[in-house]
Amino acid sequence: MVYRPFCVDRGVSNRGYSGPLQRAVTDFGADESFGGAAAKMREHYRLDIPLGAVRRHTLGHGKKIAALSDKPMSGPAQQLVTQMDGSMIPVMEPGSGSDARKGKQLYWREARLCLARGADRQQACYGATLGSSEVAGWLWQQVAQMAGWTPKSRIHGVGDGAPWIVEKFTDYFGGQGSYLIDFWHVSEYLSAAGEQIARPGKAVAWRHRQQGRLLENKLSQVLRSLRDHCEPEEAEEFPVRAAWTYLSERANHLDYAGATKKALPIGSGEVEGAHRHVIQERLKLSGCWWKEINASSMLNLRTARANNLWAQYWTQN
Image (cartoon, rainbow, N blue to C red; front, side):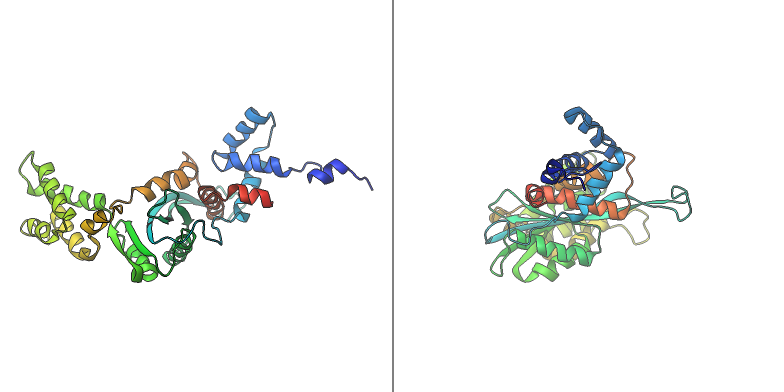
């Protein structure tokens, strides 16, 4: 038996990868394509790492890393801000024959991203999943707890009017707060309606007038401005009726005056920006298609980094 003290001390073996080397590989692999990560290893460390090894170690650590903390990341929050939104990523299902490339199916899958933070804090906690709306709702609850949610917290939710998001907010947080429809999402409906209602060249002014009314919680006046111009049921295009229906069905989630008075956000730009830096910068690279299990591993890595759990993981492994 050959005893190699250095190898034992450093935790390496023949053709093996030390912990620090795996960390460097995974660090690049979480941000770059696997080919790009291999190139970075050559550039920065003068090491030729096979692309397959980059892929194996990156995804392997993605399966093991904890994307969420089991403890609050900060103290209790009196006022919590939370958002949820979906983003489509490219997914691939390989064929069943000897050549998996033949017969493969390419499609788009929704990655659901949520965040929460104390209203007086800058750092948000994040969660991401490819799971169902039920899984997303459970994850949303865990992220809120990380951000300092307690039974005494008031919760301000903001996002688009997707029914499943409003439903999950109501299920988990409805007794402690309220959900607000993203103001700019509503404005898109008003903009389309204004093109049909206003005189030529006056659509922007018409939209601004309706936005001002919404900000003052004068929804009835906005609905009245739309109602008399609604298209007939048989119309192929109906932007005015669509705006009227959208606002009417969400009247309980349009308290912009109340949110503004408390200095709470009325737009969901925070979670939309998070889509870019947590999900899209890596999982929507040009020409990149993911197996679902590998996409989940990469989401773990990206979310763990956003939650500042990266260094903790490598310290323990």
